[in-house]
Length: 475
Image (cartoon, rainbow, N blue to C red; front, side, top):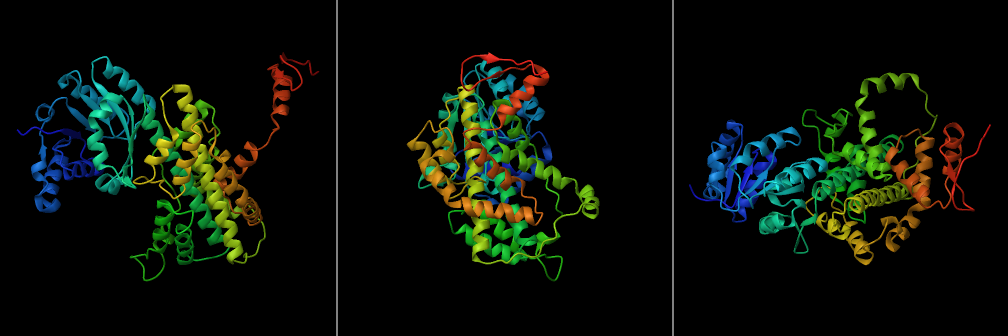
Protein backbone atom coordinates (compact mmCIF):
# COMPACT_ATOMS: atom_id res chain seq x y z
CA UNK A 1 0.00 0.00 0.00
CA UNK A 2 1.28 3.45 -0.92
CA UNK A 3 2.43 5.50 2.08
CA UNK A 4 0.44 8.64 2.90
CA UNK A 5 1.54 11.81 4.70
CA UNK A 6 -1.52 12.35 6.87
CA UNK A 7 -4.29 10.16 8.21
CA UNK A 8 -7.87 11.24 8.91
CA UNK A 9 -10.28 9.28 11.08
CA UNK A 10 -13.89 10.39 10.82
CA UNK A 11 -15.52 10.78 7.43
CA UNK A 12 -18.50 12.93 8.30
CA UNK A 13 -19.02 16.12 6.29
CA UNK A 14 -16.21 18.02 8.06
CA UNK A 15 -13.75 15.11 7.88
CA UNK A 16 -14.52 14.41 4.22
CA UNK A 17 -14.12 18.03 3.19
CA UNK A 18 -10.87 18.50 5.07
CA UNK A 19 -9.55 15.30 3.51
CA UNK A 20 -10.44 16.52 0.02
CA UNK A 21 -8.91 19.92 0.75
CA UNK A 22 -5.65 18.32 1.93
CA UNK A 23 -5.45 15.99 -1.07
CA UNK A 24 -6.18 18.82 -3.48
CA UNK A 25 -3.17 20.67 -2.07
CA UNK A 26 -0.91 17.75 -2.98
CA UNK A 27 -0.68 15.72 0.24
CA UNK A 28 -1.40 12.00 0.34
CA UNK A 29 -4.26 11.09 2.68
CA UNK A 30 -5.12 7.83 4.42
CA UNK A 31 -8.76 7.80 5.48
CA UNK A 32 -10.71 5.62 7.89
CA UNK A 33 -14.05 5.61 9.66
CA UNK A 34 -15.20 3.02 12.21
CA UNK A 35 -18.57 3.05 10.43
CA UNK A 36 -17.96 0.92 7.35
CA UNK A 37 -20.76 2.55 5.39
CA UNK A 38 -19.03 5.94 5.75
CA UNK A 39 -15.92 4.54 4.08
CA UNK A 40 -18.02 3.23 1.20
CA UNK A 41 -19.77 6.54 0.73
CA UNK A 42 -16.43 8.33 0.73
CA UNK A 43 -15.00 5.99 -1.88
CA UNK A 44 -18.00 6.75 -4.08
CA UNK A 45 -17.53 10.48 -3.52
CA UNK A 46 -13.89 10.24 -4.56
CA UNK A 47 -14.94 8.85 -7.91
CA UNK A 48 -17.23 11.83 -8.45
CA UNK A 49 -14.92 14.53 -7.10
CA UNK A 50 -13.06 16.10 -10.05
CA UNK A 51 -13.92 13.05 -12.16
CA UNK A 52 -11.95 10.86 -9.82
CA UNK A 53 -8.69 12.79 -10.25
CA UNK A 54 -8.17 12.97 -6.48
CA UNK A 55 -8.55 9.22 -5.99
CA UNK A 56 -4.82 8.61 -6.45
CA UNK A 57 -4.15 10.86 -3.46
CA UNK A 58 -6.17 8.62 -1.13
CA UNK A 59 -6.17 5.24 0.46
CA UNK A 60 -9.36 4.32 2.33
CA UNK A 61 -8.55 1.66 4.93
CA UNK A 62 -10.85 -1.09 6.11
CA UNK A 63 -9.40 -1.35 9.61
CA UNK A 64 -7.22 0.59 12.02
CA UNK A 65 -4.16 -1.62 11.55
CA UNK A 66 -3.94 -1.10 7.80
CA UNK A 67 -4.78 2.58 8.26
CA UNK A 68 -1.85 3.11 10.65
CA UNK A 69 0.41 1.02 8.43
CA UNK A 70 -0.27 3.23 5.42
CA UNK A 71 1.18 6.34 7.07
CA UNK A 72 4.71 7.67 6.76
CA UNK A 73 6.63 8.24 9.98
CA UNK A 74 6.35 10.15 12.16
CA UNK A 75 2.67 9.38 11.78
CA UNK A 76 0.26 12.31 11.77
CA UNK A 77 -3.38 11.46 12.51
CA UNK A 78 -6.24 13.95 12.44
CA UNK A 79 -9.33 12.95 14.43
CA UNK A 80 -12.59 14.38 13.08
CA UNK A 81 -15.13 12.73 15.35
CA UNK A 82 -17.76 13.98 17.79
CA UNK A 83 -16.35 15.67 20.88
CA UNK A 84 -16.39 13.89 24.22
CA UNK A 85 -16.21 10.15 24.79
CA UNK A 86 -15.78 9.28 21.06
CA UNK A 87 -12.42 11.11 21.06
CA UNK A 88 -11.21 9.27 24.16
CA UNK A 89 -12.42 5.93 22.79
CA UNK A 90 -10.60 6.49 19.51
CA UNK A 91 -7.37 7.61 21.18
CA UNK A 92 -7.53 4.44 23.28
CA UNK A 93 -7.87 2.30 20.15
CA UNK A 94 -5.09 3.90 18.11
CA UNK A 95 -2.56 4.35 20.94
CA UNK A 96 -1.26 0.75 20.83
CA UNK A 97 -0.37 1.24 17.15
CA UNK A 98 1.55 4.49 17.69
CA UNK A 99 5.23 5.15 18.39
CA UNK A 100 7.19 7.91 20.09
CA UNK A 101 7.22 11.06 17.98
CA UNK A 102 3.85 10.39 16.30
CA UNK A 103 1.29 13.20 16.26
CA UNK A 104 -2.40 13.05 17.12
CA UNK A 105 -4.58 16.06 16.26
CA UNK A 106 -8.12 16.54 17.55
CA UNK A 107 -9.92 18.72 15.01
CA UNK A 108 -13.34 18.56 16.64
CA UNK A 109 -15.05 21.01 18.97
CA UNK A 110 -13.58 19.47 22.10
CA UNK A 111 -13.63 21.10 25.50
CA UNK A 112 -10.26 22.66 26.24
CA UNK A 113 -9.94 20.89 29.61
CA UNK A 114 -10.33 17.53 27.84
CA UNK A 115 -7.60 18.63 25.43
CA UNK A 116 -5.24 19.43 28.30
CA UNK A 117 -5.90 16.02 29.85
CA UNK A 118 -5.37 14.15 26.59
CA UNK A 119 -2.14 15.97 25.87
CA UNK A 120 -0.82 15.10 29.33
CA UNK A 121 -1.73 11.42 28.91
CA UNK A 122 -0.18 11.10 25.44
CA UNK A 123 2.99 12.96 26.43
CA UNK A 124 3.70 10.16 28.89
CA UNK A 125 3.82 7.82 25.87
CA UNK A 126 6.03 10.17 23.86
CA UNK A 127 3.16 11.01 21.50
CA UNK A 128 2.56 14.65 20.52
CA UNK A 129 -0.96 16.07 20.74
CA UNK A 130 -2.57 19.13 19.15
CA UNK A 131 -6.02 20.53 19.90
CA UNK A 132 -7.05 22.14 16.62
CA UNK A 133 -9.98 24.52 16.48
CA UNK A 134 -11.45 24.54 12.98
CA UNK A 135 -13.94 27.23 11.94
CA UNK A 136 -15.80 27.82 8.72
CA UNK A 137 -18.27 24.96 8.57
CA UNK A 138 -18.36 22.36 5.81
CA UNK A 139 -17.63 24.87 3.05
CA UNK A 140 -14.69 26.28 4.97
CA UNK A 141 -13.28 22.81 5.55
CA UNK A 142 -13.41 22.13 1.82
CA UNK A 143 -12.11 25.45 0.50
CA UNK A 144 -10.16 27.07 3.35
CA UNK A 145 -11.00 27.14 7.07
CA UNK A 146 -9.61 29.27 9.86
CA UNK A 147 -7.58 27.08 12.21
CA UNK A 148 -6.39 27.65 15.77
CA UNK A 149 -3.84 25.11 16.96
CA UNK A 150 -2.92 24.64 20.59
CA UNK A 151 -0.59 22.25 22.38
CA UNK A 152 2.77 20.89 21.34
CA UNK A 153 4.69 23.48 19.29
CA UNK A 154 7.05 20.79 17.94
CA UNK A 155 4.10 18.81 16.63
CA UNK A 156 2.61 21.93 15.08
CA UNK A 157 5.78 22.51 13.08
CA UNK A 158 5.39 19.02 11.60
CA UNK A 159 1.85 19.84 10.48
CA UNK A 160 2.43 23.48 9.60
CA UNK A 161 3.04 22.98 5.85
CA UNK A 162 -0.24 21.07 5.51
CA UNK A 163 -2.32 23.39 7.67
CA UNK A 164 -1.06 26.56 6.03
CA UNK A 165 -1.74 25.15 2.57
CA UNK A 166 -5.36 24.20 3.32
CA UNK A 167 -6.22 27.27 5.42
CA UNK A 168 -8.05 30.34 4.20
CA UNK A 169 -5.76 33.26 3.48
CA UNK A 170 -5.94 36.99 4.07
CA UNK A 171 -3.67 39.31 2.08
CA UNK A 172 -1.53 36.28 1.27
CA UNK A 173 -1.19 35.17 4.90
CA UNK A 174 -2.66 31.82 6.02
CA UNK A 175 -5.44 32.08 8.59
CA UNK A 176 -3.83 29.42 10.69
CA UNK A 177 -1.47 29.61 13.65
CA UNK A 178 -0.17 27.90 16.73
CA UNK A 179 -2.01 30.17 19.14
CA UNK A 180 -0.54 28.78 22.35
CA UNK A 181 0.35 25.82 24.54
CA UNK A 182 -1.96 23.42 26.36
CA UNK A 183 -5.65 23.84 25.62
CA UNK A 184 -5.22 27.22 23.92
CA UNK A 185 -6.38 26.10 20.46
CA UNK A 186 -9.71 24.68 21.58
CA UNK A 187 -10.15 27.50 24.12
CA UNK A 188 -9.75 30.15 21.42
CA UNK A 189 -12.14 28.26 19.15
CA UNK A 190 -14.64 27.97 22.00
CA UNK A 191 -14.53 31.74 22.61
CA UNK A 192 -14.80 32.29 18.85
CA UNK A 193 -18.08 30.37 19.03
CA UNK A 194 -19.19 32.41 22.04
CA UNK A 195 -18.61 35.63 20.08
CA UNK A 196 -20.48 34.02 17.21
CA UNK A 197 -23.46 33.40 19.50
CA UNK A 198 -23.44 37.04 20.60
CA UNK A 199 -23.17 38.53 17.09
CA UNK A 200 -25.85 36.25 15.70
CA UNK A 201 -28.18 37.35 18.50
CA UNK A 202 -27.35 41.02 17.86
CA UNK A 203 -28.30 40.60 14.20
CA UNK A 204 -31.49 38.75 15.17
CA UNK A 205 -32.40 41.51 17.62
CA UNK A 206 -31.86 44.16 14.93
CA UNK A 207 -34.12 42.14 12.63
CA UNK A 208 -36.81 42.02 15.34
CA UNK A 209 -36.65 45.80 15.78
CA UNK A 210 -37.10 46.26 12.03
CA UNK A 211 -39.92 43.71 11.94
CA UNK A 212 -41.85 44.53 15.13
CA UNK A 213 -41.17 48.24 15.66
CA UNK A 214 -40.84 49.53 12.10
CA UNK A 215 -42.97 46.76 10.56
CA UNK A 216 -40.60 46.14 7.67
CA UNK A 217 -40.92 42.94 5.68
CA UNK A 218 -38.06 40.48 5.17
CA UNK A 219 -37.04 41.99 1.85
CA UNK A 220 -36.59 45.43 3.41
CA UNK A 221 -34.64 43.91 6.29
CA UNK A 222 -32.44 42.09 3.78
CA UNK A 223 -31.70 45.33 1.92
CA UNK A 224 -30.74 47.09 5.15
CA UNK A 225 -28.41 44.29 6.21
CA UNK A 226 -26.91 44.29 2.71
CA UNK A 227 -26.27 48.05 2.98
CA UNK A 228 -24.69 47.59 6.41
CA UNK A 229 -22.50 44.86 5.00
CA UNK A 230 -20.93 47.45 2.70
CA UNK A 231 -19.95 49.54 5.73
CA UNK A 232 -17.79 49.11 8.82
CA UNK A 233 -20.27 46.43 9.86
CA UNK A 234 -19.31 44.22 6.93
CA UNK A 235 -19.00 40.60 8.04
CA UNK A 236 -19.78 37.05 7.03
CA UNK A 237 -22.74 36.87 9.41
CA UNK A 238 -24.17 40.16 8.13
CA UNK A 239 -23.75 38.93 4.56
CA UNK A 240 -25.58 35.67 5.10
CA UNK A 241 -28.30 37.38 7.17
CA UNK A 242 -29.17 39.39 4.06
CA UNK A 243 -29.23 36.15 2.03
CA UNK A 244 -31.37 34.22 4.49
CA UNK A 245 -33.95 37.01 4.76
CA UNK A 246 -34.44 37.33 1.00
CA UNK A 247 -34.67 33.60 0.25
CA UNK A 248 -38.19 32.81 -1.08
CA UNK A 249 -40.20 29.97 0.41
CA UNK A 250 -40.11 27.17 -2.16
CA UNK A 251 -43.13 25.51 -0.56
CA UNK A 252 -45.35 28.57 -0.97
CA UNK A 253 -46.24 30.85 -3.84
CA UNK A 254 -45.12 33.93 -1.91
CA UNK A 255 -43.24 35.03 1.18
CA UNK A 256 -39.73 34.58 2.49
CA UNK A 257 -38.58 31.25 3.85
CA UNK A 258 -37.44 32.80 7.15
CA UNK A 259 -41.06 33.69 7.94
CA UNK A 260 -41.95 29.99 7.90
CA UNK A 261 -39.04 28.87 10.11
CA UNK A 262 -40.03 28.02 13.69
CA UNK A 263 -38.60 30.56 16.15
CA UNK A 264 -36.79 27.96 18.30
CA UNK A 265 -32.98 28.18 18.15
CA UNK A 266 -30.83 25.16 18.93
CA UNK A 267 -27.29 25.01 20.34
CA UNK A 268 -24.52 22.44 20.60
CA UNK A 269 -22.80 23.57 23.78
CA UNK A 270 -19.78 25.73 22.91
CA UNK A 271 -21.64 28.90 23.88
CA UNK A 272 -22.45 27.41 27.28
CA UNK A 273 -18.80 26.33 27.66
CA UNK A 274 -17.74 29.93 27.02
CA UNK A 275 -20.05 31.13 29.78
CA UNK A 276 -18.71 28.47 32.17
CA UNK A 277 -15.16 29.55 31.34
CA UNK A 278 -16.07 33.19 31.93
CA UNK A 279 -17.34 32.24 35.39
CA UNK A 280 -14.24 30.15 36.06
CA UNK A 281 -11.81 32.94 35.12
CA UNK A 282 -13.92 35.77 36.55
CA UNK A 283 -14.57 37.63 33.30
CA UNK A 284 -17.92 39.40 32.72
CA UNK A 285 -18.78 37.90 29.31
CA UNK A 286 -22.35 39.09 29.72
CA UNK A 287 -23.22 39.23 26.03
CA UNK A 288 -22.24 35.62 25.44
CA UNK A 289 -24.26 34.50 28.44
CA UNK A 290 -27.31 36.52 27.34
CA UNK A 291 -27.01 35.03 23.85
CA UNK A 292 -27.04 31.52 25.34
CA UNK A 293 -30.04 32.38 27.54
CA UNK A 294 -31.82 33.97 24.56
CA UNK A 295 -31.70 30.59 22.84
CA UNK A 296 -33.00 28.98 26.03
CA UNK A 297 -35.86 31.50 26.06
CA UNK A 298 -36.58 30.78 22.40
CA UNK A 299 -36.76 27.08 23.19
CA UNK A 300 -39.65 27.73 25.60
CA UNK A 301 -42.03 28.21 22.70
CA UNK A 302 -45.09 26.67 24.32
CA UNK A 303 -44.63 28.74 27.48
CA UNK A 304 -44.20 31.90 25.41
CA UNK A 305 -47.42 31.23 23.52
CA UNK A 306 -49.31 31.07 26.82
CA UNK A 307 -47.51 34.08 28.27
CA UNK A 308 -48.32 36.13 25.16
CA UNK A 309 -52.03 35.87 26.05
CA UNK A 310 -51.51 36.74 29.74
CA UNK A 311 -48.74 39.29 30.05
CA UNK A 312 -49.39 42.86 28.95
CA UNK A 313 -46.86 45.03 27.16
CA UNK A 314 -46.79 48.77 26.38
CA UNK A 315 -49.34 50.37 24.08
CA UNK A 316 -47.04 51.69 21.40
CA UNK A 317 -47.58 52.82 17.84
CA UNK A 318 -45.50 51.90 14.82
CA UNK A 319 -42.32 53.96 14.87
CA UNK A 320 -41.37 56.05 11.86
CA UNK A 321 -38.64 54.42 9.83
CA UNK A 322 -36.25 56.82 8.15
CA UNK A 323 -32.52 57.39 7.75
CA UNK A 324 -32.22 58.70 11.32
CA UNK A 325 -34.03 55.80 12.97
CA UNK A 326 -32.06 53.26 10.95
CA UNK A 327 -28.85 55.08 11.92
CA UNK A 328 -29.78 54.63 15.58
CA UNK A 329 -30.24 50.92 15.04
CA UNK A 330 -27.07 50.63 12.99
CA UNK A 331 -25.00 52.44 15.62
CA UNK A 332 -26.45 50.21 18.33
CA UNK A 333 -25.51 47.13 16.31
CA UNK A 334 -21.99 48.41 15.59
CA UNK A 335 -21.33 49.30 19.23
CA UNK A 336 -22.71 45.97 20.41
CA UNK A 337 -20.57 43.98 17.97
CA UNK A 338 -17.46 45.85 19.13
CA UNK A 339 -18.26 45.04 22.75
CA UNK A 340 -18.88 41.37 21.83
CA UNK A 341 -15.36 41.12 20.41
CA UNK A 342 -14.01 43.01 23.45
CA UNK A 343 -15.60 40.55 25.87
CA UNK A 344 -14.32 37.56 23.90
CA UNK A 345 -10.75 38.84 23.74
CA UNK A 346 -10.90 39.79 27.44
CA UNK A 347 -11.85 36.19 28.24
CA UNK A 348 -8.98 34.80 26.14
CA UNK A 349 -6.59 37.28 27.75
CA UNK A 350 -7.55 36.35 31.31
CA UNK A 351 -7.47 32.60 30.68
CA UNK A 352 -4.06 33.00 29.07
CA UNK A 353 -2.82 34.98 32.08
CA UNK A 354 -3.94 32.26 34.47
CA UNK A 355 -2.89 29.27 32.35
CA UNK A 356 0.32 30.74 30.89
CA UNK A 357 -0.41 29.45 27.38
CA UNK A 358 1.52 32.17 25.55
CA UNK A 359 -1.43 33.38 23.47
CA UNK A 360 -0.92 36.57 21.45
CA UNK A 361 -4.23 38.33 20.89
CA UNK A 362 -3.10 40.01 17.66
CA UNK A 363 -2.31 36.55 16.25
CA UNK A 364 -5.77 35.30 17.19
CA UNK A 365 -7.40 38.26 15.46
CA UNK A 366 -5.31 37.62 12.33
CA UNK A 367 -6.45 34.00 12.16
CA UNK A 368 -10.08 35.12 12.33
CA UNK A 369 -9.86 37.54 9.40
CA UNK A 370 -10.92 34.94 6.85
CA UNK A 371 -12.35 31.44 6.75
CA UNK A 372 -14.17 31.61 10.08
CA UNK A 373 -17.73 32.50 11.02
CA UNK A 374 -16.85 35.71 12.94
CA UNK A 375 -14.70 37.20 10.18
CA UNK A 376 -15.47 40.88 9.70
CA UNK A 377 -14.02 44.21 8.65
CA UNK A 378 -13.57 45.08 12.32
CA UNK A 379 -10.80 42.52 12.69
CA UNK A 380 -8.25 44.66 10.86
CA UNK A 381 -8.46 47.47 13.45
CA UNK A 382 -8.58 44.81 16.19
CA UNK A 383 -5.26 43.42 14.91
CA UNK A 384 -3.83 46.95 14.82
CA UNK A 385 -5.01 47.64 18.37
CA UNK A 386 -3.35 44.54 19.83
CA UNK A 387 -0.18 44.99 17.77
CA UNK A 388 0.12 48.57 19.00
CA UNK A 389 -0.55 47.50 22.61
CA UNK A 390 0.11 43.76 23.13
CA UNK A 391 -0.79 44.18 26.82
CA UNK A 392 -4.05 46.02 26.09
CA UNK A 393 -6.41 44.98 28.88
CA UNK A 394 -9.66 45.61 27.01
CA UNK A 395 -10.37 46.40 23.38
CA UNK A 396 -12.88 49.12 24.30
CA UNK A 397 -10.01 51.14 25.79
CA UNK A 398 -7.98 51.30 22.58
CA UNK A 399 -7.94 54.73 20.93
CA UNK A 400 -9.82 53.70 17.78
CA UNK A 401 -12.52 51.66 19.46
CA UNK A 402 -13.13 54.05 22.37
CA UNK A 403 -13.67 56.75 19.75
CA UNK A 404 -16.00 54.58 17.71
CA UNK A 405 -18.07 53.74 20.79
CA UNK A 406 -18.23 57.43 21.77
CA UNK A 407 -19.57 58.31 18.32
CA UNK A 408 -22.20 55.55 18.57
CA UNK A 409 -23.24 56.42 22.12
CA UNK A 410 -26.13 58.83 21.49
CA UNK A 411 -27.90 56.61 18.95
CA UNK A 412 -27.01 53.46 20.92
CA UNK A 413 -28.94 54.83 23.90
CA UNK A 414 -31.75 56.12 21.71
CA UNK A 415 -32.27 52.63 20.28
CA UNK A 416 -32.29 51.15 23.82
CA UNK A 417 -35.07 53.58 24.82
CA UNK A 418 -37.04 52.75 21.67
CA UNK A 419 -36.88 49.01 22.38
CA UNK A 420 -37.97 49.52 26.00
CA UNK A 421 -40.87 51.76 24.95
CA UNK A 422 -42.08 49.18 22.43
CA UNK A 423 -41.53 46.16 24.67
CA UNK A 424 -38.92 44.57 22.39
CA UNK A 425 -36.50 42.27 24.18
CA UNK A 426 -32.92 42.91 23.05
CA UNK A 427 -30.95 41.11 25.77
CA UNK A 428 -27.58 41.10 24.04
CA UNK A 429 -27.66 44.71 22.81
CA UNK A 430 -28.84 45.72 26.29
CA UNK A 431 -26.03 43.71 27.88
CA UNK A 432 -23.53 45.47 25.61
CA UNK A 433 -24.65 48.90 26.76
CA UNK A 434 -24.73 47.84 30.43
CA UNK A 435 -21.21 46.40 30.10
CA UNK A 436 -19.96 49.62 28.54
CA UNK A 437 -21.52 51.74 31.29
CA UNK A 438 -20.39 49.37 34.02
CA UNK A 439 -16.83 49.20 32.72
CA UNK A 440 -16.45 52.98 32.45
CA UNK A 441 -17.87 53.62 35.96
CA UNK A 442 -15.13 54.67 38.39
CA UNK A 443 -17.29 53.87 41.44
CA UNK A 444 -19.78 51.02 41.26
CA UNK A 445 -22.56 49.99 43.65
CA UNK A 446 -20.55 47.03 45.00
CA UNK A 447 -19.81 48.96 48.20
CA UNK A 448 -23.44 48.37 49.23
CA UNK A 449 -23.16 44.70 48.26
CA UNK A 450 -20.12 44.31 50.50
CA UNK A 451 -21.96 46.09 53.30
CA UNK A 452 -24.90 43.71 52.93
CA UNK A 453 -22.60 40.68 52.87
CA UNK A 454 -20.89 41.81 56.02
CA UNK A 455 -24.25 42.54 57.68
CA UNK A 456 -25.79 39.10 57.13
CA UNK A 457 -22.66 36.95 56.98
CA UNK A 458 -19.73 38.79 58.54
CA UNK A 459 -17.87 38.54 55.22
CA UNK A 460 -15.86 41.73 55.97
CA UNK A 461 -15.01 44.61 53.67
CA UNK A 462 -12.19 46.96 52.71
CA UNK A 463 -12.30 50.74 53.04
CA UNK A 464 -11.45 53.48 50.54
CA UNK A 465 -9.63 55.64 53.10
CA UNK A 466 -7.34 53.18 54.90
CA UNK A 467 -5.63 49.81 54.58
CA UNK A 468 -6.89 46.60 56.15
CA UNK A 469 -9.95 44.36 56.32
CA UNK A 470 -12.90 45.45 58.45
CA UNK A 471 -16.06 44.03 60.01
CA UNK A 472 -18.93 45.93 61.60
CA UNK A 473 -21.50 44.73 64.15
CA UNK A 474 -24.52 46.08 62.25
CA UNK A 475 -27.18 45.33 64.86
